[in-house]
Each structure stands twice: as structure tokens, then as C-alpha cells.
Amino acid sequence: MNTFKCSICNYIVEGSDAPDKCPRCSAVKDRFVELSEDKVRLIEKSRCTNQLHMGLVSVLDQMHSIAESGIQDNLDPGCVAIFTKARDEAARLSQFIKAEIEVHMGKGKWG
Image (tube, rainbow, N blue to C red; front, side, top):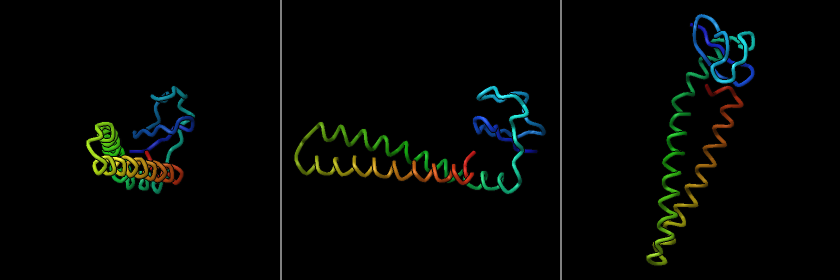
């Protein structure tokens, strides 16, 4: 099984041969590049961590939303302080993760 990457949109596909056209951007077959074994191993190794990062961003988005609701509820200053800190930390951690994923993409640790 070989792994090919579209040089236009970076779509990755596995198979004995590159597809006739890219399923994502419709680029023709000759726009696909076969990835080396080292690059394929790097992508495979990073998939678990990248999925965990994306799952955590989803949870942090929920945390941000819940914290906003708590701030709006405004029961008392102590609660508002907790919800405000939770909202701010969720936003900060989400940005950390997005930056890390961008680093992974730049190093070929994505696919």
C-alpha cells in the first residue's frame, strides 16, 4: 500500500496508485506525490496525538460556552470569578493547541 499527497490541497490517500482526480479539490492524478516511508511513519505516529488535541479543543469550546453562561447567570462575585477564569483558561489552552497543531502541520506531522 502506497501513500499519496495532493500537491494542491494536501489531501492524503492510500492505495496502489494515486486516484485519477483528487476527491477534495479535483486536481488531476499527476498532482499527487508519493510520500516516502519516513513521511508516512511520521504522519501515522502523529495521528493519535492530533486527534487528542482536536478532542480537547472541542471540550474547551464547551467549557468556554458553559463559563459564559455562568458569567451571565451572575449568582455572586465568587461564582463569576470562577467562570471568568474558566472562560479565559479555555480560550488560552485552545490557542496553545491550535498553535501546536500548526507546528505539527509545518513539520509534516499531519494527515
